[in-house]
Amino acid sequence: MTQEKISGGGELEERATLSLGTLAQGTSSALAVLGAVTLGLSVLYDYSYLKALGLNFAEVQTSIADHVRSALVWLPTMLGALAFVVLWELLTRRIEGFRSEDEIIGSSQNPTLLRKIRRGPDKALVVLACIFMLQQLLYSTSDSSWYVIFSLGWVLVATGAATHDRIRPRLTLGTALMFVLLPFAAGGIGYVGFTQAERAMKSPAEVWQVRLTNEQGGVDESVGVTLLRRFSTTAVLVTTEGEVRVVPDASIRGAVRVRLAPTRSIVCSVTGFFCGEGLGPAKTQVEPKPAQAEPKLN
Image (cartoon, rainbow, N blue to C red):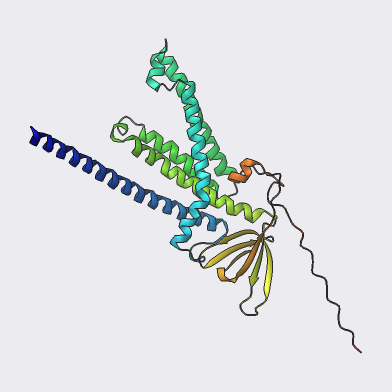
């Protein structure tokens, strides 16, 4: 009897060890995949950012550390969008009493009519998305529209494929979500990077006062810029005249941030959208240096 208890206890301990090992292996695999996906999205963000400035990776040297650091730029925006979607889903679920679709339709006296009514908004969203993509294709003058068209078009096509009767049983919930949402998120991150740089190109408002060193003459130069993006060895500047400069990062002696206008909304401060005219960085007036008196000739 005692030997049976010892044997049973050994089996339980072995199962617990295997479970912990499986959990640790699954966690490490998930973190590796998450890190690879995050790095890929950061590369796409930097590519779109430089593309809006007319640059590419052949002209601006970057490193893996630069792309990892870029995740800190786009990740808050994506997390904010994800939080909004989750809150909206919880709100709608709460209104419906956290019941499934089959439970809601089954509780109706006319399930067929209710099913058609509940599918109506989905069909309306598809129509609106198609109209919006067509409008972007015909009238938009910005290349950022391609990111919007790709994201919306992918969601429409991928959702139709993932919910097909022949494909849906073969996909798990996690696989279906990754299949639909990952390319959609990639398009959104590319859009964020492109529009951030594009707004800086179009904005006349001075955001930074950058002091550059001329290595040949050793003379400092003060430049007012609307965009300052620093990488490991290079830096990208956009002056208030719309000139794009790629300079060695070591040539930047210092940078002074211009005070932002206090009228910026919370949404504008967090996401950079819905800022409107005059709600961006405030302009500053730089006092001209007094002219030196010319020496009198005797």
